[in-house]
Length: 434
Image 1: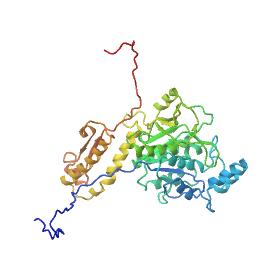
Image 2 (image 1 turned 180 degrees about the vertical axis):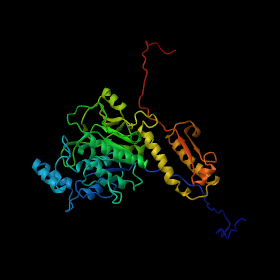
Image 3 (image 1 turned 135 degrees about the vertical axis):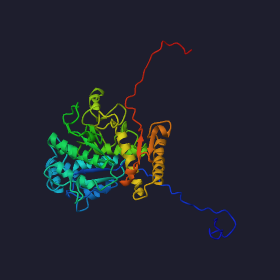
Image 4 (image 1 turned 135 degrees about the horizontal axis):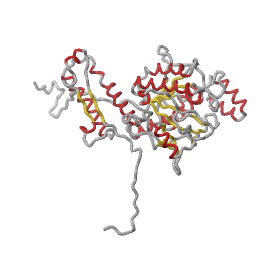
């Protein structure tokens, strides 16, 4: 029965509008640009749960400020001007006695790999990241594993849903053997496989000779772990937070490039052919022929070209033999789609398992995927060519319903990068066009 004017709040002749919800729910895109950095801080405070920081200043305030309120990097910078002994003394004072370089062949003092990575992340467009300080343990892999009850290490990251990248800038500098490096990489990749909404950003060991490598590091990752891991090479040259130039792992800078690309273009855009800010060069110069071998092994190279800024020149996962998961942007796009749908359909739990629920899920997921298709993330001239959503009696049988399950089958056609561009150039004899 229509409302009377006075019931609708109308006290005078005119047009009155009443908003009524149509019951539709919107699937909101999950975040893709927040990394978690595990490592040792300059101010040695021991292991603690993941801490969110939103700027370089916030990082230094929390993890690199002395009890007197001064920046430890400034204090170390002053020591640099007074010789090596002064630097070692200053490092010992601010890092709990850990003043030695992280590993043979590396000039990165303990605590600096993480700090350089965080600065590189913010310099390249990152907006926020989680810091996961590590504590002393029998091995670096054990420190990475952490404690679930204490919320430390990778175990603590399982409780943080909005992480989309995981990196340990200290792993490559501090690993004294290939086995230790592989064990740490396996821990990080296994964590990403378990969570399914994040990707590991891994570094290669440092070679101070500057000789370009031709093979990928032997990390011993399982097939599933390779789908959630990307490796970058070589290390980058930076001015140094203490004023001393050094070469550091590129994972922090690369994570910033990923975040910047997501913000400007979207997660479906391969984070390659993108400038790296805050670096002076690379520890090795890779040629096309050298990269050809590395590219086949899933190693993403950082390159310098005449007249251009230093660039990320690769966008592959380590799943080189899997055509579905070979490209990094495909892996990250599917992570984004899965996580977005998972987070935005929790309302369906405990609803009556019938056609009304199936129709609502079909509508919500279809609307979300259609938005992704319009943004250029999915291939196809029509939505039907780009994706499908099935949630009806065909995949929700009586037995499925009896088990309390709702089955929603989704298929997508992700856009793949134009990795190789081929041109055919033909010279003519100079005849005018017909």
